[in-house]
Image (cartoon, rainbow, N blue to C red; front, side, top):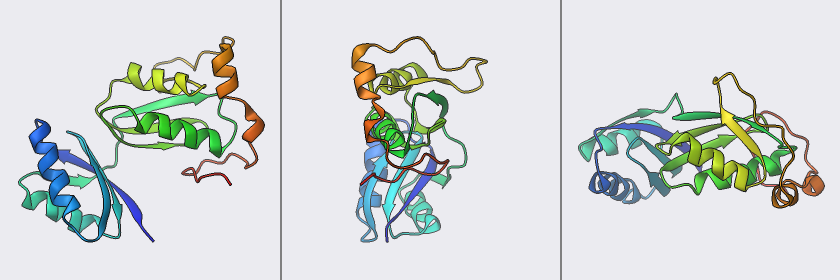
Length: 169
């Protein structure tokens, strides 16, 4: 079964650098996919983290297992893990995001996208968000009609827990 590894990267300064790291990772037979930004790499496959780090070092850059996301968002309006999966997809579609780990209360975003762009992506998906730790909670004003439709809980058939989201049936 494929696993996902998120690595923090150092030494990358341009698109050529990210392309070099992606090419090195994609060349491995045990890597199914790799998303690389200047700061993070999200690698899916059967490779262990240490061998991925060695591959990146062989390409001339530094890497370590990511233990700290670039941005943490406090979320509201998510009712189930399908909501969390929808939010995760919206965040991972933002340019500069390597990966997002989302539950119904928070999103840990790995990458270099700015916080306001991430918040806008969450709002476009029909939910609310603020940067965690900014002494604020997500806005609780009424949703727009399109946000209400997007956040409809009709699909919520799996109880929400603080885990990595799995696709709903």
